[in-house]
Structures are given as structure tokens and as C-alpha cells.
Image (cartoon, rainbow, N blue to C red; front, top):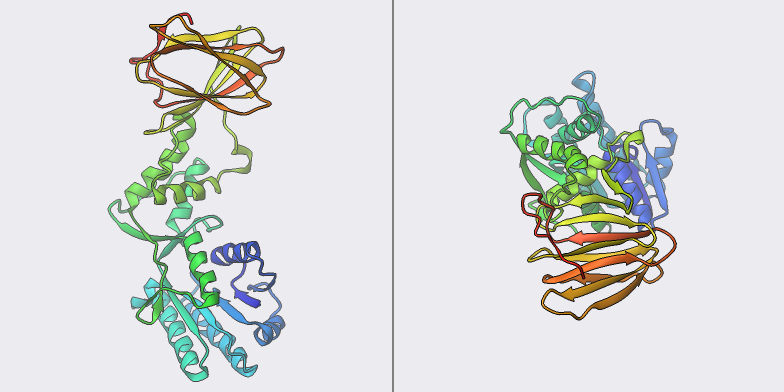
Length: 369
């Protein structure tokens, strides 16, 4: 299948093209404002499907709205008619097509001309009235408040929240692209004559700003955002794409002594924390037990022995562990335990605890194994 994508270098175009390639579509005709206009005639002659994503959002004058959103759409459709090419055409419109403003009127005109084209030629047409979109490669300080907030907060710039109570309806770019690719097989979700993305998210502007700020703070307090919430998960993925290239990494606090080090990596509100423990050769750590706190140990480098003893028993249980054979060892409650490095190199252990460390309630009691 040969696929034409207009607006190929835009936010939606880049995400769509990358996923089409991921799914094995190789013949993609990319057309953008920098493309030689003569190629559009060739592309509209040969293509089997059209994604018409090109449009004008922020022109220098209002006349460009109609020229870009109606005029260019008409040009693409006329070229398809010229070549008697009845390929399906998918076009991106906007929920603002309902509004009586220059942008809305231009998007509405684009909708009408494509519906007329479908009636005249019999070609399948898909018109998506999209809400505000968010996701990677969205341009900040352009037409997306989400991109602007992510970019500014990630780069230590101020944001402006004019009306905190404004509620946004947002669609995530991966959900949009999924629907667009489904259209290749005529698998679309329709509401009346319009196609729609069934998964959207409602969020107030103040909540949006608060969430993105919490992503930045997570590098300091180590609390991972709530990945069980779909919107938070998607927004966090977007936020990371706006980090400055020299700021992908961040330091952790290493608690070091003659035995090695202990470093917290992640904290969560409901799933505990993950830490990295480094033990030097011959060193034994632990010799304590817990009432409710439980842990999982995973030695990823070096070798050692994990020992357990029920605090009311004299029997010692041993597990040999090594980075050569990755296995998780559960640390049960009511058992005093320790871990000894029996090798000649540092032993590195990934440790998970079911609760974050609380110095006021550590639930940790010293007792030799």
C-alpha cells in the first residue's frame, strides 16, 4: 500500500509516519510545506490512501486560515479527481469547527468540501474532529498548552495559568494514531458522520500544571508518578521528551561507609520503594527483622549468601545467590536476616520494600541471625 501523508513534518504527521513504519508500511509519500509542489501531482496519482493532516493553526493573517485549511484541501482533492484516484481520504479537523471564528470557519469549510468530494466520487472519507492533542514532538509555545507547560517546566521556565478552572478535553497522540491506522482497514469509530478517538481525558488547567510540576519534583523526592492512572502515565511519557539533552540523568544520594553503599532509587505512594545495595567483599549487612515490612532481594552482580532465622527458632536457612543466576529472594516477616558478600568483588543487590522508609516508624529490629 502506498500512503500519502500531508503535513508529514507536523506533530501528528511525525507520530503517524513513525508508527506506520513500525508496522511495516514502507511506501510512504511524505508531503510538507518544504516539499517540491510537483511531487504532490505524482503522489496523488499513485497513492492508495491519503492522510491529509496539513493545515494552518497560527497564520500571520486570518486569510491564511481559509487558504491553508480549505484551499489546500481542495487542491489535494482536485488532484485525486484529476487522476481518477478513489483512494480513501482521512482528514484532521477540529472541535473548533463548531465555532464561528476564522479558524473554525476554515476547518468547517474543509470538512464540507471533503464530504462533497465523497458524495461526488464515491471515495471513502474519514473526518476527525479532534480535541486538543498531547504527546511527544508537539510544539511548545504554538498551539498546545500541554507542550508549553512540559517544555517550560522541564527547562526551568515560568508557566502562566490564566484560568485554573478551565477544563480541557485531551486526546493522546498514540490513541489518535491507533485510530488513524485502523482506518486503513475501514475500522473506525463514528459519531454521526464524524469519526472520533474514543479515548479522551478531562483535566483542569490547574491540575495539569500541578501534575507536570510533580514530575520535575520526582527527581528530588524519588516518588514515581501514579502509573496506574492512564492520563498520568501518558503525560509523564510526554514530559520526559521535553527534557534538555544535557539533563537526561540525575544524581541520587548514596549512603556510603566502609561496608559499601545504600541508595534509594524509586519511591511510590502505594507500592513501596526500590533501592540499590552495594556490599564490599567479606561484608555482612542486615541482622534485623520486621513485623510488617517485607522485601525482595535480587543480586545482579557478585555472589553471596542470604541467611534467615525465625526469631523463635535456632534453625538458620541459607540461600546462595549470584549475578550469574538471577533469582528473587523473598524476605518474610518475623525472620531475622542478613546478606553476606562471599566473593572477591563488590556484590550489587536490587532491593524492593513494600513500604517507603519512614525514620519515625522504621519497623526494623536488630537481631543476629
